[in-house]
Every structure is written in C-alpha cells, then in structure tokens.
Length: 236
Image (tube, rainbow, N blue to C red):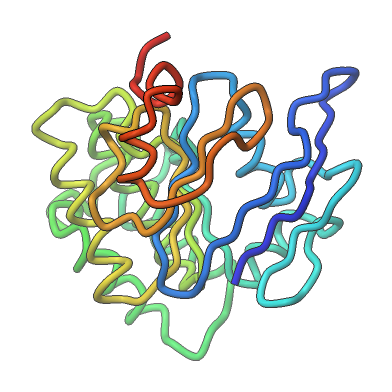
C-alpha cells in the first residue's frame, strides 16, 4: 500500500532523512521507532506532503504522491494524527470529528463514519458537546485519532500516540488502535520513541537513527539486538 523508497529530505541546509525506505502493506500495523530528533516526525510529515523529498519516491497504492499537496494526499486516503493532536480548540468534540467527513467524500455516509469513530472511542460520545480546549491530554489524543479515522482512510499515520500519557490511558489507546487495524482493516504506521510502547500486534518495525533506517524486521528481533537497546529503549 505505502512505499517510501530511498527518500532524502532537507530542512533548510540540514539533511534530516537519508535514503529512508519503508513499507506498509494493507491491514498491517508497522512501527517506526527512534529517539527524539531521529527523523520519525519528518518521515510522517513527508508522507503527508508537508515536506517534499529532494530525492526518492513515496507511493500510495502504486501512485506517486511525493510532489502532491497535503489536501490531495488526504483525499487519496491517508489520515494523520500528529503528536501535538491538532485539535480545533474552539470546536466541540462532535464538530472536530465531523469536519473530517467534509474533507474526503467516500461511498460511506458521514453518519456511518462518525459512528465508527465513536465506536472505537466510546468515551468521546459522552463528550460530544464539550469543547476541544476542555479535554485532557488522553482525551485529545483519542479525538485526534478519531478525527483521522472519520476521514475514512486506507492508511493512518499516528505520531507518538502514547507520548506523555498517563499509564492508565495507554492500554485504552493500544486497544483502540488494535480495533482500527483488526476489526476495521485499516493499515497503520506508528511513529514511537520507546519500543516498550510498540503494541504486540505490530507486524514489522523499523528503527531510525540520525535520519537513517538501521533496522528492519520483526519487533522480537529488534528487542533481542543489544546494539539497538540504546536507540529503542526510551533513553535519551
């Protein structure tokens, strides 16, 4: 479904991504793990069209997207939940979710897509009239993912979905992402800085360090590789 091939990205004079390659197949959950500043968010923002690679290609279902604007990439079926959430503070929970249905018309009705988002995050239904600014950090994270899901995407990009959350909330988010992948059949790419937050159902893991992919394979293999411990163990 998603192919990132030998992508180089510069931000001003800084070479941030160096020949980064990764793939996400249909119905797969794949994780990109690396320390803060390693290039995870840059990789997701490049896929989403906020940044454009100087070299390499990004394809969705065989279609090049590396030169397309962000709104076109969303229309093609990629939903993005950024680390900072991107919640509209002046809108209610219901309005935040509904607005995604305007962005990408699909064969499914807006009501169906909204119901699906609430089905994955039932707690949000009770907060439907609450303003975005009135939510806790965990609730904002749920809303960010729910809004991306209401886009009716083929692929979800989740940037640090567990970062900064209370330990009691992490299992809720983990189970919700599992439902999106396993029950709804969406492909998911998760960027994460700590391998201990990588869900058990992740099929493949990439480790990024200083803008380069240094490991690709099953999460179990990465955990056994002592040379990767300092990168993926959550230490600074």
